[in-house]
Amino acid sequence: MSRGILSIYWGDEARLPIERLKKSVKKFHPELPHEIIKVEALSGDPSSLNRKAKMFDLSPFDETLFLDLDTIVMGNLDFGFEKAKTFGMAIAICEAPWGKRYPKIFKGDELEYNTGVIFFTKKAKAVFDSWKELVETVDSSIVGVNDQGIYTMPANDQGSFALAIDSTGFNPFVLSLNWN
Image 1: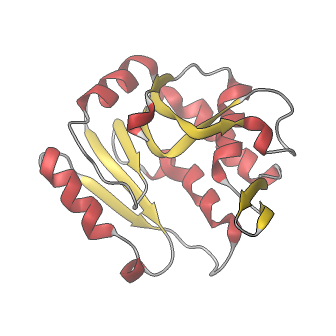
Image 2: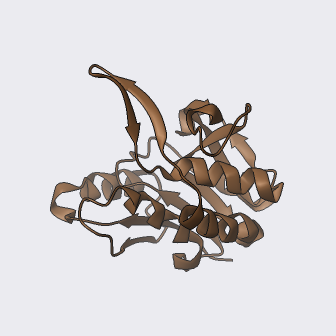
């Protein structure tokens, strides 16, 4: 069974920390192949994050770890791979996990998961199929607060991902926050 790491990006790779990620992966897992794929996205399009929903289709591996490019691997990753092998997916809860932040998607206490680190196997196909559909149909805008006050981010991939897990009834292994 093949095991490897997948990262996806869009935009100007010269402005992204690709080398930092590759170096951190090689430090702990020089044996793992790491596919870094550029996908097409419109410049300045806030829904570009939704391109991540295609990671399942883009992965050439049986056991995949998806890593956002801004990730730094800080230790051995075998635990996450083993949990994904058992459960089909291993993910961390988002550091701000309140589904209510997506007022057009959730009304209750649904959990939001981080989509920057996702271990998965072929068992999780239904979640990814659902996610691909949902990113095209749901309003994933998110309300936030910064120094200037309340703002709305027009698109976010984590709300539709959480909805895909919720609507499929998939039960992933939940990693502790240090995996985020």
